[in-house]
Image (cartoon, rainbow over all chains, first blue to last red; front, side):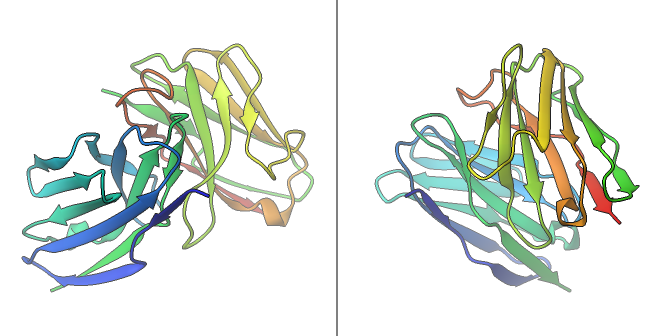
Length: 109
Length: 118
């Protein structure tokens, strides 16, 4: 079956750095997406990786290793507004998006 | 760009009522739209894939007669929850991609509809 694993919850301190990991086992691979979802709101797109390596977008970076079936989202200079759930999603060989359960990130002052 | 509008944001209605939710891509054409349901503290669950001009593709376990989907144009898809019951209460979210399912285009989400059936 297809599976995406990410930690259920993480806690970090304002101003610090946090890394949210995602491992996947899917039938084929056509890209990995990270989304942010605040409580009670719809997800918003953060990043896309299809080749190995690091993609940087301001305070957020996303890394992919296809051989390891592994990605991480790195958040720097954490702000209170970064408290949200972070969803990892993979497009499989049929271009269907498979979603992880999300990681709830709690930022403390 | 890539704005998706979903309406209404909130619905509270009596059991047995049918509820229609609209999803519009405002600044791009979407041949494919997606309908999700999300229960509190749970992940997104894909209900169906809506294809313009053809029948929707429903995920296993989703009743097509209960959740009617119509995708009559390249910018509008609707989800109708027929004869809704309290167990249908959930957060319903639509999304759309610029080039459908393929490619590196992300899905852009509407703001969601919170449905409460009394």
